[in-house]
Length: 94
Picture (cartoon, rainbow, N blue to C red):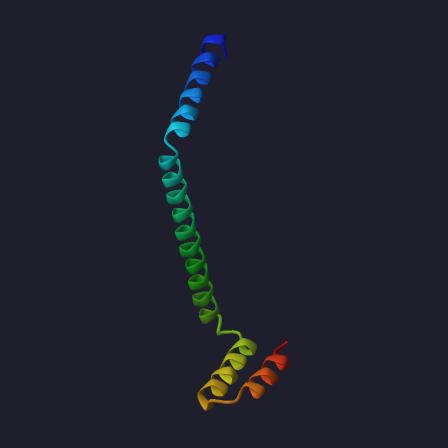
């Protein structure tokens, strides 16, 4: 890389810094959009992984321990059990 190319890159860098300095609103808006896209992308990615794992576990016949625990938990919720029995159930799981 010769000196002329380095100068051109440096000039572009200086111009970008000046633009950001004189227009901070644009920089904040761009940062907001980048953060929003990152959050949405992460959420969609996690949802996709959970869906795929659910389908995989369903195809393999399920996981008996988790299925029984969820069934028991739903029974407790449906019966409208008091908080104490729920706490005891959670302690059994841990």
